[in-house]
Picture 1 (cartoon, rainbow, N blue to C red):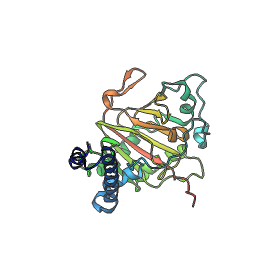
Picture 2 (picture 1 turned 180 degrees about the vertical axis):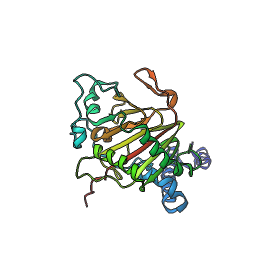
Picture 3 (picture 1 turned 45 degrees about the horizontal axis):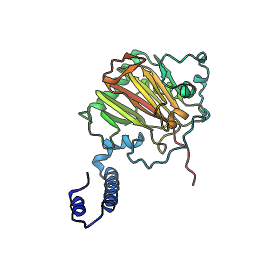
Picture 4 (picture 1 turned 90 degrees about the vertical axis):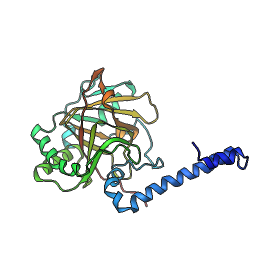
Length: 290
């Protein structure tokens, strides 16, 4: 609703409804920029909000994105993923359910899942390393500043123990081809049992064409929806200890989200979702033209 002062002006015919609407839009834009400036200029907000900005959930919708097209050619092929046997034609991978046949080829090519990528022991190793940092955040956030996540804690981490570094190195070898530089910071997102991630596209300013994430603790369902056609939907089952790789068309042309616990179904079967932690690696964004 508009501020009471504007409504009063409209009733007293001091300003037209159209002009009041324009004034209010300017006011909302001012408030949005004020929030962003406060985020970056106030040191006490930086540790909590910087991970969200680096992860691409930087709020405003005016961030430029690459053109949307399903004919985008695959540009990412690591040595390990290229050696994987292709699924038989017409048979979807067990982790993928496309609701529209038009997106089947793009999903099979650019949305990959490697189940049991890490062992239970390696999962415990990662959990042991990230839990102290997550617990220092004390509580889960339910009023996210850009309204992208509900019920979460998150950190960016650069220092890892040697066993964890070996795990992350395997992730990077599978996800990124030789010569592609991964981001130094690893994003750790802790989603509460009653939390969820809303549809979004990670910012193209801070990450390249590939996102690779390890899923820990509990299974979840990731939903992909095409930017220009909301009927083009695919569901992806992410089991614990699996690795998912989003790239190219899926990275840019689709929003992705993690469904709420009471909505988590895959091919008609209920997926018992609880607390979930994802350890996410990204590659460097392409250099911007001067």
